[in-house]
Image 1 (spheres, rainbow, N blue to C red):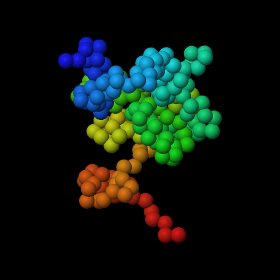
Image 2 (image 1 turned 180 degrees about the vertical axis):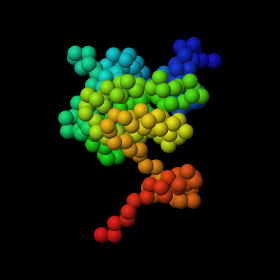
Image 3 (image 1 turned 90 degrees about the horizontal axis):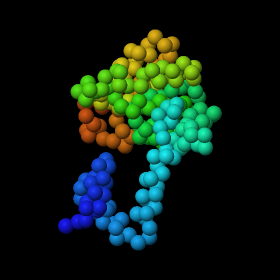
Image 4 (image 1 turned 120 degrees about the horizontal axis):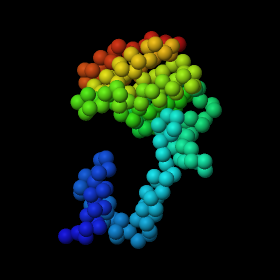
Length: 205
C-alpha cells in the first residue's frame, strides 16, 4: 500500500537500535507529511555525517574532522586531562555515560567490541596493539577497565588484566552494585554480591 521509496525508508529506519517496524513507519510518514523542511535537513545532515564525523584517531571516540583531515576528539585535545590515567570502555555510549558522571579526569580508549568467542570475536579482533601504543606514548600509569558487568565484559576485563600485567601500570576495575535509590529486594544476587565485595569504610565524621 505504500510507495517503494517510503517502504525503503521504513526499512532503513527499522535498522536503528530500539526502532521497530511500526515506529519506523510512523517516523517515515511523519517526515513525508512534515512541511517545515525537516526531511530535507535530515537528509543533508546524514549526507555530511560520514565526511565530518569520524572515530578519534587516538581513542576511538566520536570526533569532528578538522581542516587538515584529522579527527581528534575533545577529550584527547583537552590539555587539562590527566594523560597518565586511561579508562577503557567497550563503546562510545559508555564513554559518554562516564563523562556525564563528571568522575573521570583522565582520558579514554574505546575498544569498539568485547571478547565474545560465541560471536567469533577473539583477542585478535580487539585493538590491543593500538591500546598498548597509546599506553606507551602517553606514559599511562593507571588503567581503569570499565567494560560492562556481563559475561563478555568480564571476559574482556580478565584478558586486559592479563595483557597489561607486565606493562608497569596499575589496573583497576569499576565497581558495580546497587543503583542509587534502588531497593535491595529488586537487585539480583550478582549485583548484591558485588556491592558487598566492593564495600568501603563508612566515615562517620
